[in-house]
Image (cartoon, rainbow, N blue to C red):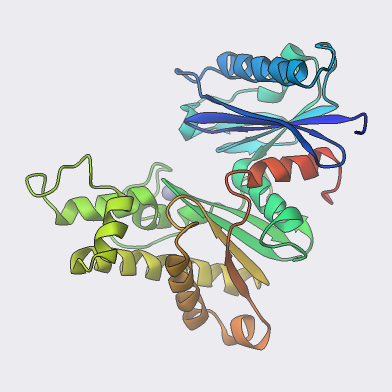
Length: 317
Ligand SMILES: [Zn+2]
């Protein structure tokens, strides 16, 4: 085992996942905890600190031995260079949090942050479904829709770090306000939440209990042959494919990786989206040069592997 240790953390709305890794890529420790409520930065950092202590004890390290660096991926709008999280709807952070400063002071260790989907595209490119690709797009379809762009061999963050917000391209459908303040964003129609909203317009409360009316139920009903449910699935597949076809025309990727709880483990759904992309995108991008459209491979660890790549200095900036 080599000397340097790296700690990578994924802070999600429901759980915090932490890995301790060595510089040969071995996972020495893996543990998750529920995200504290309310999601105060200090409370979250406290959980990470406890997990790190546990990792050190379990591996027989001196408790004072620190990882060389800690990499944290967070769902939200953040500036990785300044170390600021401007907004994280999942964590209910609406004011800017100087996360890197707070955490590096409390844990006395260098800290790096990255948007979770940005980290995930890096993970999938270096270790997962997009290995070897220089131009890859990652999209995660769960309660929302997130995306990461890996272009010309680099993570593309945009001017302020907010690039790749595939979930908020528009318009798709009509009449739904989005959490971002916009209208009819892709994720209002094609995420798990979007599918649920569509289902609730079709099945009244006295027919199906609202607690059961989620995306999973819609997919199950569609599989059983329920025509209305199948229509919703077909519609979301169509608009997701349309959204991604736009990205293909803009960025000409050689690989699109599709993950997330709604789509990631449903191969038929991914294949359906792929068919729409191939029908709608410009022919040279999907036929003359090959475009792979594949399910994610590293879930739920894609972001953690991406942070590991970043901490070990292998991401070209
Ligand atoms: Zn939006």
